[in-house]
Length: 298
Image (cartoon, rainbow, N blue to C red):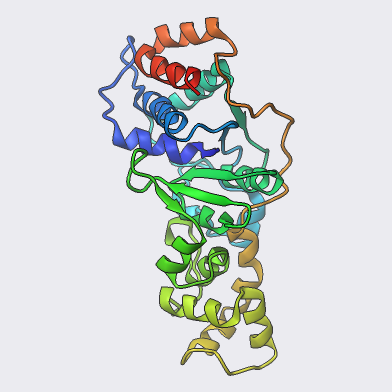
């Protein structure tokens, strides 16, 4: 089980009131919420391995070099991400709690959490569940392995299971074609422009007709006219420069360098003393007890 940890702690932050505080009055809503999410996932899904993936770089240079607008609207000051002020100090606490528990926490310099997930998925020898609220990771679903996304849009207790059939039914595309589809459609939330004038329906039609973005571009460059919905060929030709670089931005990495780590879900805390200190300092007894109980019952 691979956790898109930033996606989860942002969800916890916005879903739980900031009135949930530590004894010193500092907010711990994201910390408590994430701990409870992990407890629920462990209890309901019993993974043998669990990784909390992190953003070492939320806006990697290689993606910005390809498409300068990538996440540009999220920049606060300099090149830092605009994160709520009361969430910022909670992230180190989350990291300390995960480390004390012994839950693997992985990141890779110059890469996003999505890329860590993509790399671990590529390396995995068995079934993989990816827990995220980010549709970008739909590109990794693969029924043959199997790899599926547990999508948090309805909450951690009501996860949507995203497999190839889900992608095909929702978007009208082959089940493993989400990255190509997203490249054409674009994604304003990530600053990806897509092809001007090509919306979801046309993007789906093009990917279904040609099978992949690569095959579509080959047909476009060869001067073919068959299979292009009315007006779309001209729009695609005008966006050829974008389409040349966009896959490097949209596709998650499968080769991010990662340190060796024991991914086994622990049955007991790695550092009980540190965990007790964190529980006392931040008022985390209740959620940590729920998580420890879930770990002990695996």
